[in-house]
Amino acid sequence: MKFAYQGTAEGKRVSGIIEAASQDEALLFLYDNGIEVEALKQASAFDELSNIINQLRVKFSRVKLEDLIVFTRQFATLFDAGVPISTILERLSEQTVSFKLKGIVEQIKKDVDGGMSLSEAFAIHKSVFSPLYINMLRVGEESGTLDVVLERLATILETELKTRNRIKTATRYPKIVVTAIVVAFTIIITFVIPKFVGLFQRFNAKLPLPTRILIWINYFAHHYWWLVLMLIAGGIFAFKRYKMTETGKRKIDELILKAPIIGKLVHKIYISRMMRILGLLYKSGLAITTALSIVAEVTGNEIARGAVLAIRSDVESGATISRPIKNSEFFPDIVSDMVAVGEETGRLDEMMFKVADYFDEEIEYAIANLSTALEPILLVFIAGMVLLLALGVFLPMWGMVKVVH
Image (tube, rainbow, N blue to C red; front, side, top):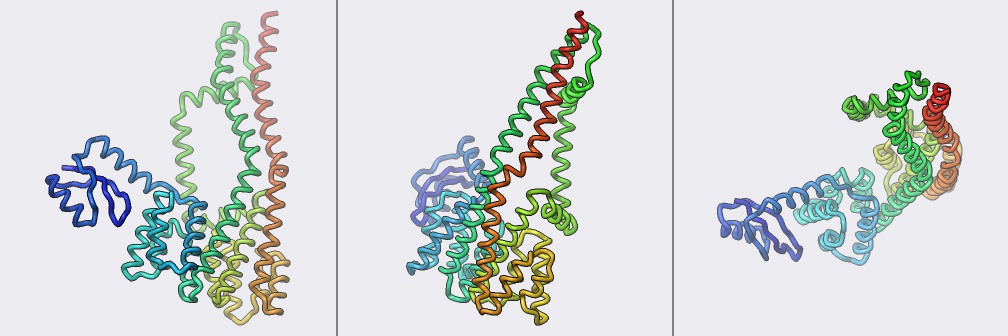
């Protein structure tokens, strides 16, 4: 039999469904697991459905970047205040609004209480915490500067969030325009064009080419919609499989960097992120080769990763970091020039931050002009769609006038 329960465990509200031979056995099981039962009843179909929905919500929900930033900031503040890590994790699990993050933090607390280090406990949940996050935690643990590291992590995440939000804002207008024209196109094809078909068939008039194209699109969408869905699903599946291969990932990353308009913006974002992270890791006391290894794994782009690994190889051979950066095609000359100044003055981390700040300004300018840069492409797309719709609708009307007269 299945029983639905509600109660408290370690001061927190819990609920769920368990299987037991009787209600007494269910009570005993829950008591043995540290749950103080407040309500227990035989599970109904509604209870089981609610439990399944909650499980699916936790499994497939994403941890938003905003939630991760708040979590990291609060962790740093509580740790700086001298609160024990186990207590910090318990409080944060209670305060977070993300169901998925709540469950993960509770599991991290159990692992830490069981003797696992903080970075090892976080590393189990790689789908939420990036390699950078985990490696920075490890650096903080080993150097005794966990609060500082967490603050720097939060700063990196906030910078990434601001960039994402600025790009969303800049592309909002093009998205609205494209959506509107697609909706108009769909309405005209679905409701307007079929009217012309019946009307022209009565007069045995020949439909113009634009109208025949729209009628063919309408016919194909109505009779072969399943094929369209299969092609879309197959294309997405094939793309994901190709992207999972080493060759595919590299080729796609290369195409992104070479893409018109957006490629230069993405390139600048990668350079800014890499230099900021490298500066933070170097400032935290890591050897430059170790810092480069970590940066290579968190770039998110195979071309950038290859460039960083090549730099690390040269540094391991005895070169200064500025020389392989200058020889790299991925980094502009300004990066190597500023890094060289940092090496000469003994302020390498500061110059890396200045490089990141410089490219942040470049990114902000590029994003501000993104809508302007996209306008020509948008105008060509809209003009093509409107021309096809106008010719498809008005040419038959002119034809009808000739047939009538």
